[in-house]
Image 1 (tube, rainbow, N blue to C red):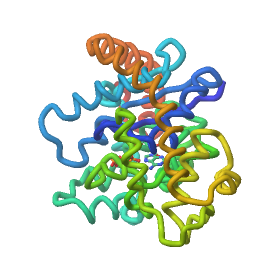
Image 2: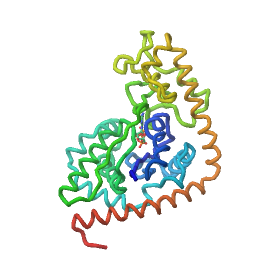
Image 3: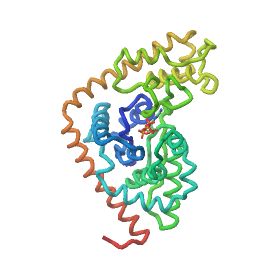
Image 4: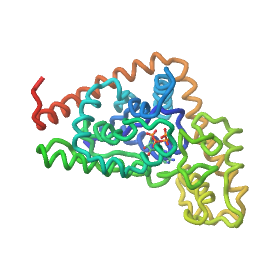
Length: 326
Ligand code: AQP
């Protein structure tokens, strides 16, 4: 059976980009593959956090993952920090990746430009991400477009390790969604929708209430041309609205453009489609959020299942590198 792995950081509440770009793909893969989904809480520490922030965000994120349809009987959901195997393999992979390769990562450039404190972890975290993936003998990694470069680096690291130390890791493939792979900020349509944007005016949070969603779409930045066309280069704002509406309704954005002459109705329809999609998920989240202890219990069971696979891969890597057996 195909093995799937993907992760998400508990860096704040999740948004429409996370859902359309990655999480929505995770649901059917539970049935079609042997799926491992990690809340990558160690990655969240690459940027300074207040005490308790990551723990709270981890619990809320797990609740959202169950609310959108992850079934702990059908897949393995766990928190990365529960398994020391991730850190141990990360060190072996840090010693496999070069300084120059890490320096070329767009996300590092982007985040370090904005950060007051640039941690060493922010620089090396693609090696930890590679460890997350490679520990599970992963065939496929369903992610949004922004992760493509990191996934390429994971493949390079796996191939280099295999050629230096003998066959150790499965070299994984990146799987992008057909639609929604890159959802842009509604206020800054040249930037991706992100949890850590300066304001949330351009970000549709999964928990946003209908009136807020309608307001954010109404204020979405477009352009002064007043013609509805899908043209991501010259009309990023309008194309983003068409892309979102297309991803939610599973229609082609270029075809949808033919239905509109003005931006107003397009904004209203995009908002309505998103509201209708989110309402049942929000209702399920509200039920699940009432019992945080149950959610942590499910994560602990997931971590035990994950360890049975991760421990075997780590031991193989240690042995192939030539470390003392434990
Ligand atoms: N705007 C987006 N469009 C499509 N996919 C997206 N993803 C994130 N933003 C978009 C996908 O969501 C998954 C989880 O992302 P993450 O939380 O691990 O980290 P990120 O990519 O760094 O997401 P954010 O929201 O921008 O968080 P911060 O601001 O904390 O860095 C990934 O599969 C990602 O591709």
